[in-house]
Length: 73
Image 1 (cartoon, rainbow, N blue to C red):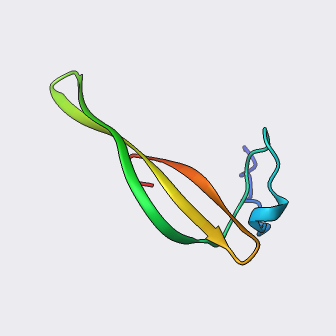
Image 2: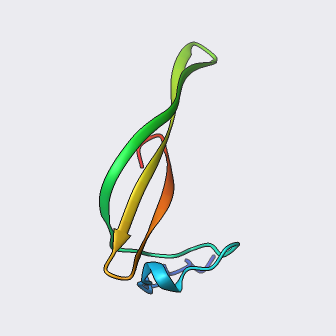
């Protein structure tokens, strides 16, 4: 019988604590501005899938960053 993996609890981080090259952060930020930079259809078999990329200016009380959002993010 296989053991089920339990989900790790989120550890919330502030913008000023982020460092380049790190992953897996959970942030609570306010979206200040968004700009669509890429939107195109992609044929995968019988369906056409949309691919969207947007750059979003987000921040909290400690700073602001540009977040790259993909598709439904």
